[in-house]
Length: 241
Image (cartoon, rainbow, N blue to C red):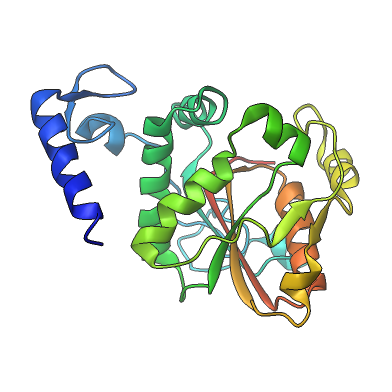
């Protein structure tokens, strides 16, 4: 905590000398990465499904029909924003251009939704892992960066070695929901040392986008198989499947 104070003071000095510009419109944004109007215009879901975070037609705090018919492997989901313009632009900048400023916006919005909607906190955060070859090539995992953004204000550890991608898979983009599930079946494994006996019983998976939920489903199934009883899903953005 003491080490964080000089960094905050330095950031305030930098903001004073070099005012930031909004990532979306380019106008002065004060100390944030978005100006007030652009932040207000970000697409949000007022009444999300508690299980999958998709928008509900009703204002009731409830679960959508799809989750009632086929419940996902996780217990609850929270999304920071809807995956629509300009969130898709921010996600792409964060994921492919390593824009930490865009990631900061996404993490800030997700944190706000967690603080508003979470029914208690997990023991730890688990970022969705990349396969080791992709991690080596990219040297960047946006899910881990998001998890670390959330960890400090929530006071939670980030478990980067609990879950790993045990086999390489095709890119999910371009695949339909059925093919995505087939592509990821058995792709994730919990390390034996962490799961036997299970030290962690309540964790939150963290990722940048949820579309069909196939990746998060495969992760949640692996965690449950290892004895973790409660799995939440926290994503920066939610896209209709």
